[in-house]
Image (cartoon, rainbow, N blue to C red; front, side, top):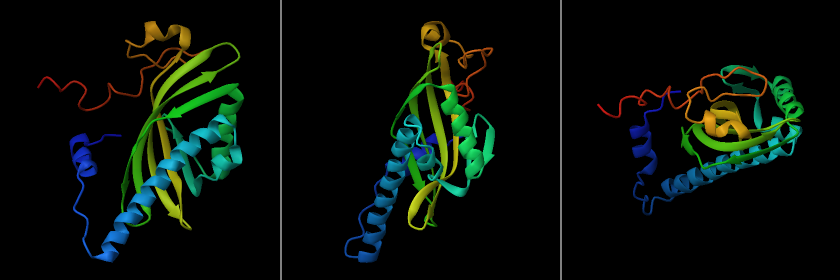
Length: 198
């Protein structure tokens, strides 16, 4: 997904003046902060649920029509989302996802968008895979609770730990065990990647 980083950075790092004695406007500011914190908490709780294989908690973090997308392959609805995560749980004996802070844009209508990134260690029966990923998210508030309407994951790399040194400098940083190396999803695909000298 292309991101107008300068515009988004300006919008999210500019703090408007508080609305003084306009109590309704001040309440909106406080409400927006509560919404952002709830969405940030959702991301951290998601990582905990994945690592603990807490499948019911995980599926409940999506709207009923929610979508989980992994590298362009999407599944929709609770049963399909459950099956996608169970397949991952069956592949990796243990997982440790470390989410990093993200950004959220509230749209004022009970929806929001955001992105975050993180790192993971994923143990198969034979090797340890290290990965770095990004999530592009759509959120929806349902009965007062923020949920994922869509969660899309892409990777900067996914490489067996003992192959990291030889893999990291290559564009082919997708090296899941038993597969041929593939190009990573980013950052080389960013429209700014080759333009910094111009």
